[in-house]
Amino acid sequence: MNRSRITPGIRISALLAMTPPAAAPVQASLLAYEGFDYAAGVDISGQSGGTGWAGAWGYASNWPGQMSPTGLDNASLAVNGNALSTVGPAPTPLNPAVIYRDLPELGTSGTTRYFSVLLRPYAADGYQHGEYGGVNFGGIFIGKSGKPGSDRYGIEGAVNDISYSDVPVTANQTVLLVLRAEYREGADNFDLFVNPSLDALPAEASASKADYDAGIGAAVLVNNFGNYLTDEIRVGETYADVVPTTPIPLPGAALLPGSGLAGLAAARSRSSAARG
Image (cartoon, one colour):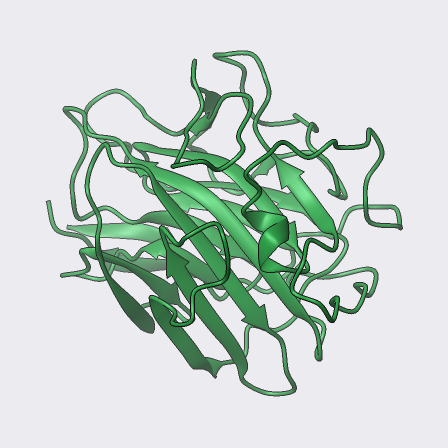
């Protein structure tokens, strides 16, 4: 059956340049954080907690997201709050859940950024193992693709242009995904680490992609076909920024300078077959 899917290659407008990455591989600057510390059952649209963002959460689709009663955790990663749930009644919803929040900018040539997220495919009467789910960080998607036969976590550029890890997608199992993005003129370099050690950046990536120009994208999109939990989204300048083992004091004001929303420039639906 064909399913409507938002392309991972979404182009999003940006307002301001990012700070150059730190030279030393230590915690430098947590640029943005969302722990979904909202009351259980609250609709995510319009919520503006966390730090470093340029606006509140909004919908680019008609399938909503609500707060689960508990959050996700993974090993010793520092966590707080609840989790964003797109779990719906059976059968699985017939529309994708695309829930976005703007950042001042991502993808500036010559910078390196790190991203992390906790993801959990939820098994229920309506859950289908073939359904896609993950997060777009600007123009790149990490998670489970909707391409037929996809059963492992990976990096996706344009729709169905995927670099796979060896880690299978398992229902009801939380996974920590960490992405290193090296933005360049032309094709960028992306490395995905699945359930990595939190002590230091692993020597080898779980999957890599160096043939895709993600462009300048300034939004994070929770992007799935329902029945997923998403939690602990972080954007930083170093690996240590996005895999903290102790809570980091977060200021009430945004960490990135600037004002105004970076608008969602384009979101194109593609049709992708998914196995039940």
